[in-house]
Image (cartoon, rainbow, N blue to C red; front, side, top):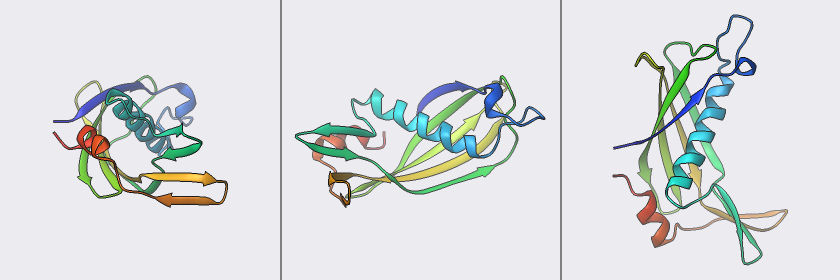
Length: 136
């Protein structure tokens, strides 16, 4: 089972032919990841006890099958493919309002903490996070 969210392709997301620029699929994946995390009571970035926590990306890819066009309403299905000790890997399936698959993307994010501008370290997911992120 996956989480779904929707997003409309805006004029600024497209080129002169009205086709969404490939880089915007990555922006849409990031937005869908944020929606997914918020639905589970989590965030992609937060502060707690003077420490900045977050899930920076360590890998991102997208395979394109059909173009997304201006004013298409895209459904983005987010699935957790792998839950590691410190990381979470997502799959993003993009479909238009006609049910056509447009693209499949993947992102891997690592749970990290930062105690200063030059100090970022990966840390294990807490049991509470693992429970909220575990694939359904």
